Length: 208
Ligand SMILES: C[S@@+](CC[C@H](N)C(=O)[O-])C[C@H]1O[C@@H](n2cnc3c(N)ncnc32)[C@H](O)[C@@H]1O
Image (tube, rainbow, N blue to C red; front, side, top):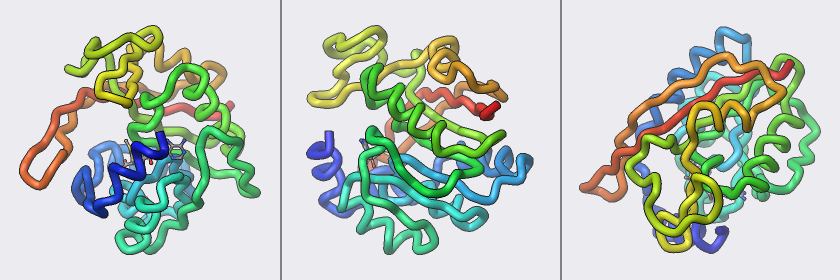
């Protein structure tokens, strides 16, 4: 996977453009209503979304692609990015008020999805909030390519995705209080002239 992502970012182009996801504004509203000051962002990429979060909160990103980290330094000076794998225990000293994780969870098979969620939970303070987005079962890519696990396909060569129903997503976060779930459609640039449509799900949960 690291090879795939290093290659994806090596051109130093902003592969999903400069505009943040709509979920960033939603997350910021929710975080503000829970008095969030600090936000941890696993799989922060080149900072497309952290740039907006870091205008309002103290933000730390976790990312394993050196190219993405280099790009984020120029694009989002306020966010500190730590080079690490989010599938290994984070081992950070602080506990965070909130975690925002955009379109990373669906990239992994079951065992690694649970690692990401448990690693994130360990880094959250009591009553802390997590906002995760992922591919939904409504997405046009669902069912394409070879089956790797239940509802998980190699939909592009060398790239897996898990497609979440609402129930499945809630089950992944068992033990946390579910504040809200929802579906949203997003159109994301895939090159300078083209965009791709995605049907995403989000979940907002609280540590109890
Ligand atoms: C689909 S991109 C999303 C990027 C970012 N969240 C955004 O919204 O722009 C997935 C990101 O997760 C990173 N990533 C994937 N697996 C990782 C891992 N095991 N450890 C750290 N980062 C990882 C990739 O390098 C990439 O930047």
